[in-house]
Image (cartoon, rainbow, N blue to C red; front, side):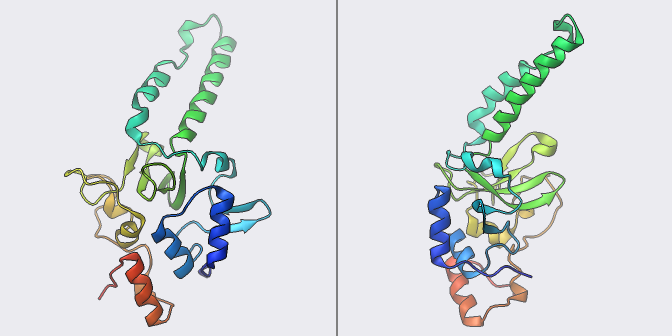
Length: 219
């Protein structure tokens, strides 16, 4: 069953508690469509507001600016080059101790790559769609493909032409798979994230929401 929408006071409370401002189109989704539905559910528990399926230990990273992947390429390469190699140590125990320390550092570095972002949709096999909430890229959508290629890439309408990452409202209209770089994922036509053909809301309410989110209803 689709979770009901949030009321404005709940959304404002979540923003204050989390220390972020939601993009207007995401606020419209939360108040006009659902607190979750096809997206990770924004819910209030005994620990406060947070998104279902997102790690609780990422709360402290949410207010940090979401970094563009280009900004940490050199640091990523430097960290990889420092991975301890067995031949550099006198025994296996010393190598393992050094490697585990390096692995902990690498884990913290990986977490920082998605600072200021939230997983709004899981796709299985470790893939997910991110919504950036902070920094210059706030409101843009990204694909976390690190499970297979170690990359976080923008979801875009024209990767070849250098179009910028799509905004939340555009992502709702097209879906992640249609916005991946050429050759990534299955070849499929755009599929709206919201199942508009099965709209459970009154028609006049839908028209107002569609205008706010810039979604075209399929014919």
